[in-house]
Amino acid sequence: MRNILYLITFFLCFNAFSQEHAIYTYRQKDSTLIITGKGTIQYLDVNKFKDKCVRVEIKEGIKGIQFFSFSHFELMKEIKFPTSLEFIGKNTFCSCTSLESVAIPPKVRLLVGSFTNCDNLKSITFPDTFGVELRSFDGCRSLKRLSFKYLSVFNSSHLEKCVSIEAIEVSDSTCHYKTRDGVLYEDDRVVVYPYAKKDKWYRFPDSIKVIDALMNPYIEEIYVPDDMREFHLYSCENLKKIRSENKIFYDRSDGDLKMDSLVIQVKNKKRNALP
Image 1 (cartoon, rainbow, N blue to C red):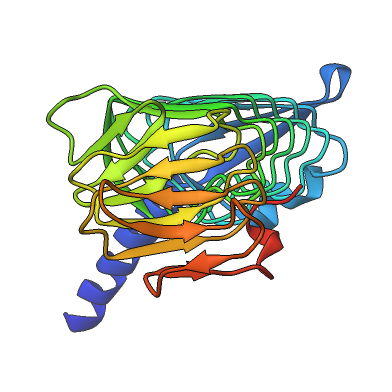
Image 2: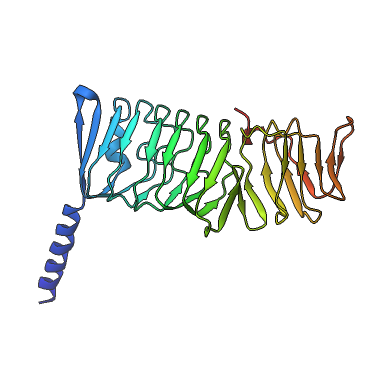
């Protein structure tokens, strides 16, 4: 009896598994990979199309894309996602250097390193509620703007080498993250001051106490509250002064550098911002 139950359980599990797989069809006339079926796209199955695929169409029923699946698809210009898609794995589209625009489907709620080093990526459309972790867009040199309705998380990313980004926008006023003049804030800290923001002078809100990373070649002077706790300067070659109403935190306007102990200046981390 026990053996019969084992056989029934095995059959049911095998049958369920057999129904949850993706099917890959390559259409040579327009260099398009069409993915149908159910379940998750696997790296080993899709990697063989890397050097010939220009377009990818993922049909309804596919729920996920395994990490690294489309990494280094350097010819891929377009990818269409289904509304059934629920997750995109880490580094899934790393170094897709021909990809120009992406629309993330509504069930996907988080990206983890998914689009790093996509040199030509200019436009990304997000669902209403979304999260970004672990340098999802680092190295996207053509990306100019990130617009979210409700940003649920934005961790461990200062948009390294995003040398064209001018602004980040969060439109929902109830969101934990706020934006002003294209700068992203969380509580009392600056999360991202965009690299390509052209202002020579900028005044931070009175609530700000920490600037996580200032990487901007255009800024010359910033104005902050008196009770600032910490600054991190990376690539700010034209920055001459950081001041508050009653205090000078950083000053090299006369050629001699004067720097408060709250300022952490990392001159050698050029990888964080330079092209």
